[in-house]
Image 1: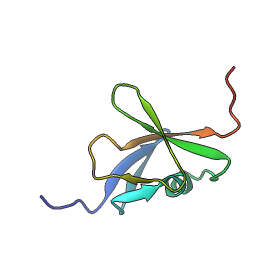
Image 2: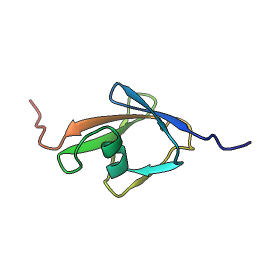
Image 3: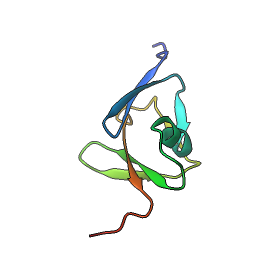
Length: 79
C-alpha cells in the first residue's frame, strides 16, 4: 500500500493537509498559528480520551486515529 502524499488532520475546528508523515508538538502548534510556550497541544483519541503532546514529541500521522488535536492556553486554570 502506497503512502499518501498528504495527511489530513484537524486542529481545533480547522482542517489541514500535511505533507510530512510525522510532526512535533511545536510544529502542530505553529501550523495552527499558536505560539509554542503560550499554548499546549492535546491529541484527541477515540472514546474521548485526551493525550498531551510535548513540544519535542513526534506524532506519527501514519497511525490510524491520530488526526484530531486541540490547543489549550498554558495558563488555563480549573474553574
